[in-house]
Length: 501
Ligand SMILES: *[C@@H]1O[C@H](CO)[C@@H](O)[C@H](O)[C@H]1NC(C)=O
Ligand SMILES: *[C@@H]1O[C@H](CO)[C@@H](O)[C@H](O)[C@H]1NC(C)=O
Ligand SMILES: *[C@@H]1O[C@H](CO)[C@@H](O)[C@H](O)[C@H]1NC(C)=O
Ligand SMILES: *[C@@H]1O[C@H](CO)[C@@H](O)[C@H](O)[C@H]1NC(C)=O
Ligand SMILES: *[C@@H]1O[C@H](CO)[C@@H](O)[C@H](O)[C@H]1NC(C)=O
Ligand SMILES: *[C@@H]1O[C@H](CO)[C@@H](O)[C@H](O)[C@H]1NC(C)=O
Ligand SMILES: *[C@@H]1O[C@H](CO)[C@@H](O)[C@H](O)[C@H]1NC(C)=O
Ligand SMILES: *[C@@H]1O[C@H](CO)[C@@H](O)[C@H](O)[C@H]1NC(C)=O
Image 1 (spheres, rainbow, N blue to C red):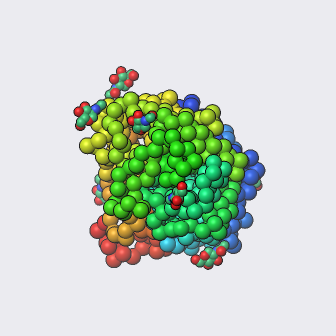
Image 2 (image 1 turned 90 degrees about the vertical axis):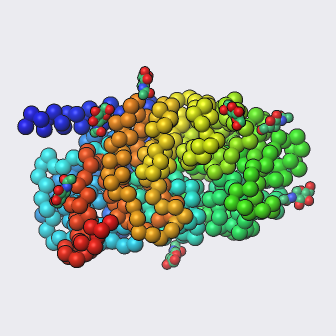
């Protein structure tokens, strides 16, 4: 008994000792409690149209500690009450109850929502679950092309519901950015035609946004650009109403070729031929970080986005994603980091730069001095690094936890939207615990960064429980439960088949 108590105390301290960054305290839901409550109620109606009125939901910040989404559930045979710290926390609590007390499951491919007639009772004070970290992140910059390229609002609405149920409070929201870039560049004097050879087509936007290619699969029509802007408004409204903090794009430095027509002295260099696309589509133009135009364009972009969409303070920019910088000098890389951040910070003094840590996979270029130079060029706590493939290649472990910059432990799992049957349950089971417990850990969350979705749902159900799980699971038992929830009943053969995973 004493041992149990001691162990639990250890669990608690290990959770609380994780470093908190007050520099991120302003990243909070923007919507009022009332808006978040209604958004969560509406979500429940979409998932359970005929039983939604059985669920009473409330926002109550007092159910959990600051910056740790928490929910409390009480139920009678006829109704279920969920009090939680945000709209997302309500949705999480709702899914927790469906999953753990009703044997239900909601996945991308479909849902098993065979509810019992009478609910299982949870008596007062109820079940209270507190998340382990501050953030749950979702999406890879590639997912929008591999899986969402032609998503309309119906698809996005389902996707955002899935996010909320699985606890996501920091989602990437990249849709519609071409409309904003278009305004900024055309105001500077570039023509629509000049932008058409810069943006790639609808299915390849991920890679033109990252500066890997330009123009490929295009041109983008004005109608597409405008439609995506309208869609982004709906996406942001929904995310914010649920209390999520959307991550909007920042300026990474890739510019249209003819910027030099307007500014003949602009210092623009060409990057390498990523993926052998050839001269017309490759070798994007990178504006030198020291060029005064860099901060000018970057901050104009953030300002225009604020005017159009409002502000959430987190911006994603990846300058060197799978692109080798032209110099390995630490001074050059520090300037790069400083200027990307300055462009954000000039327009939004509370800006936080979120960056994919994927670039550091190129270990023949990114040695410790280079990584350190880039990361330490931004004030500690003003950057969030996605440790993009923590289950395969946890970079935080070889960089003293990103030299103190906060990071998110992410499961990448899927490359290129491929449809194969695989996943590393063992690693995903313990990895986040190792991350939180790492020496001087700066881990602030967990995340999903699949390049494509609609595959291996088991991995995503499994991973997102790490939001609140206080210890690793027995995988054999977990798989059995997963199969029962997936099909709605136990079958010996099905169970055996799933155990082969
Ligand atoms: C749920 O909340 C309602 C309204 O506050 C209350 O009347 C009901 O008793 C609560 N049910 C449970 C199971 O706590
Ligand atoms: C979105 O597309 C699907 C078909 O892929 C269609 O059924 C649905 O009605 C569309 N939604 C909207 C809002 O256009
Ligand atoms: C750049 O501008 C020149 C005129 O100065 C024009 O001939 C050329 O087509 C433009 N290039 C692109 C890629 O739009
Ligand atoms: C232009 O940028 C390159 C690298 O970004 C730098 O080496 C060079 O000194 C810059 N040229 C001028 C004139 O500033
Ligand atoms: C940059 O690369 C060169 C050649 O590979 C090497 O000699 C030099 O030490 C590197 N510079 C830094 C700062 O790592
Ligand atoms: C956390 O790290 C400490 C010291 O490195 C170690 O003794 C302990 O077992 C670890 N705990 C977990 C849960 O990994
Ligand atoms: C952890 O941080 C302390 C205090 O800043 C420092 O002395 C120590 O070297 C760090 N440990 C590691 C493994 O980086
Ligand atoms: C996991 O659970 C199974 C089935 O209950 C049991 O046979 C196995 O020993 C357990 N594994 C561990 C590591 O506890």
